[in-house]
Image (cartoon, rainbow over all chains, first blue to last red; front, top):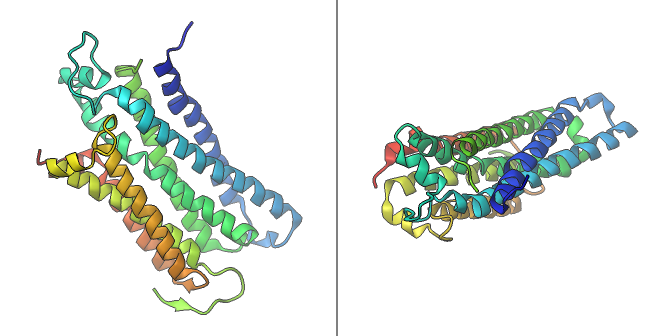
Length: 176
Length: 113
């Protein structure tokens, strides 16, 4: 029961970071939605805001880690940037394009995933900054909170799109 | 965007700046993706890190645009209150442009190579 170096990095990028991202996004969104203006300066809001900051910064940092490992470690092994391999074992990119039936996994799936995934850490960082900046005042800032929730959902959707296609691509043309 | 004097509570300028900067970063990634598809010279120029190919330059330019616009907008809008609805609309519009630009059926319409 061994895991190769490439498989290990792919698992870290997709499964471990992906699961953590899911949790952090869920916690962050629940935290944003659950803020109540009537809490005012109540002690419980300080605890709530602390938990919210942990979740949104966690989501942002994990999202950055996910895209960095994906783009600069795993993607080179996918082989899209390398010349056509002359070796007996083709790269996942070569294998997908060699068959018209599977070509769209690269032309649509990977093409979308490798770009849209980067919108997740950008949008999540915006939310994390705003939560930190406003702190407990965010409970009374309904308009700002609504805007942040929209941004956070878009960040999640971008991450989810990249994650789903990544999982499916690794099934069709595994790295490692 | 109308700027008003700072009222009680924190001004919303810095958050508006962050939102719009996020949109600028996303749009930039979308536009650079389109340009890469449309022109082989652009694609070659964006190979900043060979193992990643032109994706490295696309993302690099997008991130530079994101952080640079955030710094500039923050310096302009700090301490100010802005029309937050307008700022949000602008940010979301830019985000949607970025999402569209990174969607393969759309950017492949510009394929020139």
